Image (tube, rainbow, N blue to C red; front, side, top):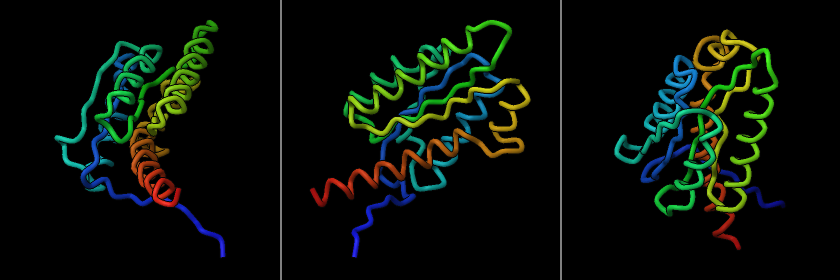
Length: 158
């Protein structure tokens, strides 16, 4: 029978970093609250969660890297909202930030989850920040918890 390696949703005793873009704060504050709530409802203590507020989405990777490589956190959650406008600015910011977050996770070996919304409108962003379509900050936190356990389980059999 195949060995199945999976994580669980128990954040007890874990430390988490959350990097939050302040731009589009109407949305990002909700994503931040969702992430913190998910961690706490799954066993983390408030004292085990550090939140870093950064000016915009483009700035997220710098601080996510600092947190991921510090040795202090089991996982880092990135939340932000990039909303499409009339210029290609959206495309450049979203692509650079996404690539940066991916590179940090791969180079550090620390789970760095993506709770950044890239939407066409404020309404779509609000829907994904706790209105109609759940809260992507909450989902990113759950992914972080599960990834930590999965990595630990994988390491245990290596």
